[in-house]
Image (cartoon, rainbow, N blue to C red; front, side, top):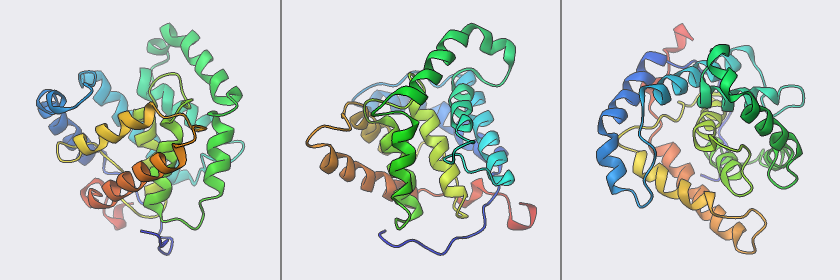
Length: 229
């Protein structure tokens, strides 16, 4: 996967298909969770609904040609995190106001793990394949210090989807088939300091695994037909 394919037009998300996959995962989640080395929180209806709102937002960003890693558009990433945590309803966000303000400060001010770190890293990845860039951005977000106080896994999955869609690839959607292969390395990333001496080797290995996962599990059923996009 060292090559970078010719850029294909951005594609639109089939949100109904995405919901079907997430609901399948929700139905199987208890059994999957029991097999994980570190158990995850239950996959509630609210988690599914917030993720669907996140995919809709990612779809709108691609449709408008918004570069979320460009200066002036960085608040789009903050919005992704807000959506996965508390949805889009202002009334539902109100109890989280202080948390969201603290997350915004961390996003802009954290020296080693804030948005500047992610933007600078991503700018140096132009020659990498879209799967490597998407996986690498996810690894960069989750390794310590993480980009957000909370919700990094879900926001990271949406950022990967945004990057993939930008080159005509399907979004990454958790399913019963890929959940374990996604959660296990994700847990390892979270405990790894970006500046640790062994980080370049460990995180590079995990990035390759995730990039292969994105390639192997890209499901074109999650894309609208080109004529409908």
